[in-house]
Image: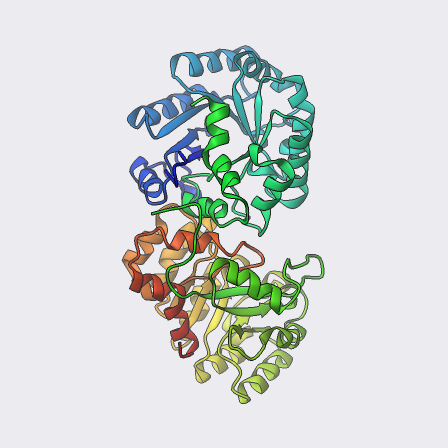
Length: 250
Length: 251
């Protein structure tokens, strides 16, 4: 909690990626959260294309600290379409995961390709939030969100990393400006000066979501991006938790 | 206690600030006054600055252009960029003869693809060692084996390893162990929990705050350092004291 704001980190991982220095040690993650006032971290496992394996790991992880972690479901179009939807139903209805994470750079289809439509239709029917990795990879250009968002108006689409770099960030902002159901998430190892200010000024304070990429990265510098940005306290409150609580219904 | 507002609770001397423009990218700070205003916003009192021209085109011209940023109040402290070329070393030696060199930065390493080995860098590294001048070494641009092997050949040379990030998570601990005269600049070092682990293993004296502004925002890592359990004495060393010692500058 920071100055009365329940802080929600919208971008976190479950699973090990030791090669990049990432291990999902819940005690370490909780220590870093507690030391800077993060109340809840949203987590997902993107390392298993079957979805089931990773979603089970996410559910087990969240169950150990249900007041501190919220799980998102992951599926991949490397699976047959009916398997994707069945796994999403299982993950949401049986495992209690509350939103969807997708990672287009792992596959051969850009995020607006029809192969993703069964996932988007499911999310639209359930009125779920859905976060994509977006960035410089051709599958993950945020401009594609401007094509997808109007077709699935009950999904709250979140541009993970807000595209990461200037050209892609401009695409993400343009998608948010054109569509009320597009949000801009902040985690990035590119901590370029003025980015948080740009997202708030051009995308709108009601569209910005704090994210950290924990435990790939320590959440404290990523939180520091929001706290030290030259934006209003009200914009900070919305980015740190108000917007996430609204679209996740928590 | 975290709040929506943040100011550092100790004096801050930033070890890593870039000034001026690249040929293909423009700094948000157009001049000395705007940089000082940015520093004031984040509670940074002083900064070591180097010129962007040294990154991509000409360290020699960059060092000349740095003069316009320095002023006379001692708040912006010059760091001179170096290439392994006679022309570059002559410039540094001329500046040193006038008492103006307290640190040097390796430049252009990712452009020239020239291995950081004693056979190419000995004139520069021997001179720095003899004169007791510390060297800033940008990690993202270099081969880790070159760094360790070469710097071990100059055991008296004080170094600051700059810009390690999560992709270097495997390097940093063994590199600091292998290089006892090396300090770690922290602008990009975000692997979860590893800063506390390194502080525990190596002691607070081997770490310096740097922002790497304007490549990165000035505030986030300073905020981070205030949330890793350091007491005021330790925090003051990381944010200012260790850098003063490395530069040989009085507070």
